[in-house]
Length: 103
Image (tube, rainbow, N blue to C red; front, side, top):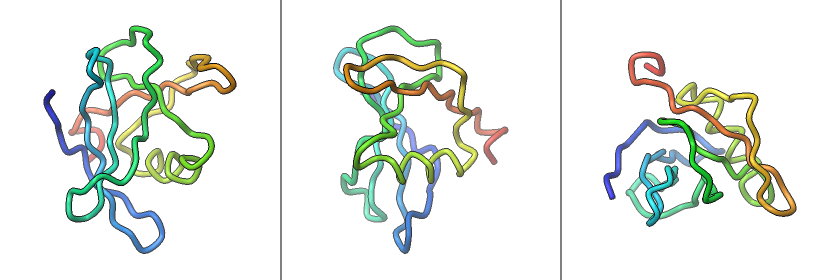
């Protein structure tokens, strides 16, 4: 499971790392790490459905609501018009921007 640091973001006074990785089944995932690289949260949700390359389903409800808004504001991601039902909520699909675009 490769892990790639996409960039950092601020959430209040905290500086957090956004890391691209994958779930055990190979589905794309985004981990949020604290400034020391320790686990903070999982931004993504595994829907078990195939997604286009560099696309990820985002958990933007419950404890992730503010986190998702801050992550999108970094410019590292682009919202698409796609949503995937995940039971009681729908997960928006974001595209991970290429490094040249996000810089």
